[in-house]
Figure 1: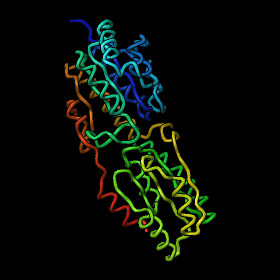
Figure 2 (figure 1 turned 90 degrees about the vertical axis):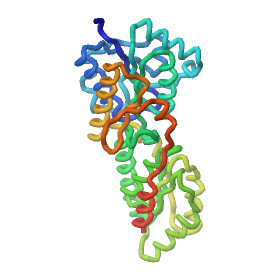
Figure 3 (figure 1 turned 30 degrees about the vertical axis):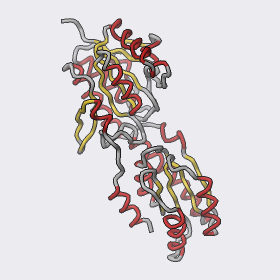
Figure 4 (figure 1 turned 180 degrees about the vertical axis):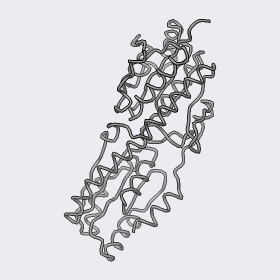
Length: 322
């Protein structure tokens, strides 16, 4: 029987833990007698013959590093039917029967298109926003939250010293999970997320005025990127409360850094499961975490799921942020 050849790529935004997933794919593949190809710069690598055969040492000393050793990019060409067919033809030329795609929803939609061309594809959720509905956890989420928490803790020191309000925008265009959990961890007075409507005057200004009466002198407000309005929020808080307010956008610092223990372990588990699926000739799947267990879901079913925020956790955050 001929040696099975699989490939692995990282696509979309980078996330801490992607390297740990790549490492697990390569080493699990080799342990199962497979040839493993690393595809560089996402789907671009399949269009431009930018690939390299990987061995055990190719993934040495990367588990602790942020970013991705395979690099990542978004591909306009791949978003066309011609681009997908070209990528599939390249896979067939190299004898690649299975592909592991580490990325987010957009990357998985690309994986689904390639599956339709006969290539077995397995997706691994790697995005700091935790915005993939089929899984309760995505690689990079824990590291991003810890980075945001550390940055806000530093901002709190100066806010406290000057009796200021610090309004901090964290990542999350469609999903407020980073904002919600970071806000709880730093004791934010208010947390604004895109999934839950809010009244700024009532939910932020009035709350600050009420807590001022209890002796509170400095404040933290966490805003998800998808909510927007940072400049207005900063100006309005200062006008309404008389407290000096400063806005800070944490930005891409949340994407970088050494992955936490949780991200390294989850990424390793997911990478190993992805290879096991391809070993058993099971493609068109997304690896996910549900109730703490690593599972796999048919790709169309996974992409049809709708992400929701934990409203009970949000309610708790409101009750204890007084």
